[in-house]
Amino acid sequence: MLSFKDIIVASAVLAVVRGHAVILNVQGEAGSPASVGFKVDPNIARNCTGINPCQQDATLIRDAEINANIVNECGRTELTGNIDVGENTENALAAGQITKVKAGGQMTVTIHQVNADGAGPFACDLDQTGNSLGGSGQVPLEVTNNVPGVNGFSQAKTQQFNVSVKLPADLKCTGASTGNVCTVRCRNNAVAGPFGGCFPIQQADVTPTANTPQNIQSLKSLDLVLAQQQGNVADYPAAVRANQVDGTDQQKAASDAANRLLGAPPPVIKESPVSNTGPGAAPAPAAGAPAAAPAGAAPQKRDMPRQALRWARRYVVPGAEFKPEAAP
Image 1 (cartoon, rainbow, N blue to C red):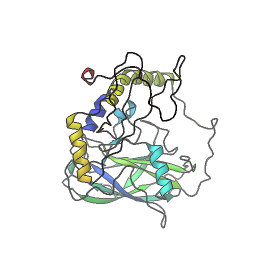
Image 2 (cartoon, one colour; image 1 turned 30 degrees about the vertical axis):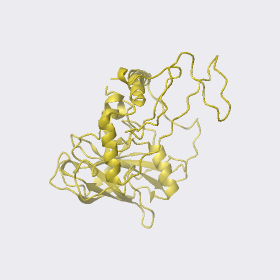
Image 3 (cartoon, rainbow, N blue to C red; image 1 turned 180 degrees about the horizontal axis):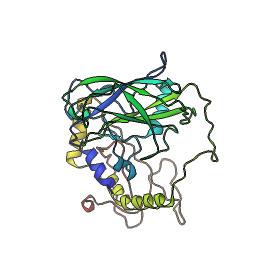
Image 4 (tube, one colour; image 1 turned 60 degrees about the vertical axis):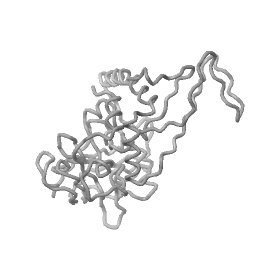
């Protein structure tokens, strides 16, 4: 099983993956808004092939990472890490950026090929619940007018291709707060990837689903539940250590370089308060009063950390001081 730490480190140093593709636009029914691939950044240049910044918002969707519970079914980007499908879907709904579709209809998906192994062919599938599936269970979709390529490779670079994706005649989208959203996932078969992305679609010819605890079908076998639990237990210590460390000099330099290239302001980091609500917990200090240090504990450093990972927070163990030299 891949460890959480391995993926954290790879993303933090802006991993040296050599190819990518990005979903720039998705058009369903005429006159409806267009969808965009999750976590695609409109400020990133599309006329270059370099790792930084040209590949930073491309999505890697690897079954091994999904099955190890490292990422969701839509994978991750090098710049922002795991893609939260539910959050990104709700953001798109709020912005009015979800294309409308109908059962049996067709979509035009614009894929930007960054360099050689961001090529085709692309395969697409569908999560009709929006975000309840993991590494399996998606409905395969018919793709025509595919991106040229063999095994994810071609000589094309910095080019855009319009791919046609046909939806099933029995389409029934039930996801998101609206009860009628599906998630479509497209990816190629490049060995360094697979590369691609996910995007939301909203079905116009279906009665929105009102979910209840009773009508949600999400049964997992005992074997799958136990395997997932064991994997989470094994990965937890490395995940905690990764969140404790502010970042190596290399990680900080990589993050600063990416922000400069993107013209992004320095991130504002807010530390989450740590509370102990168990038996024997001390009373909370009055508003505005500094929290008292545990007896015998050395003063903790309060400098604001510069984190290389936007999706990792500093983790503080109550009653103990973290020693960076103890981390691997």
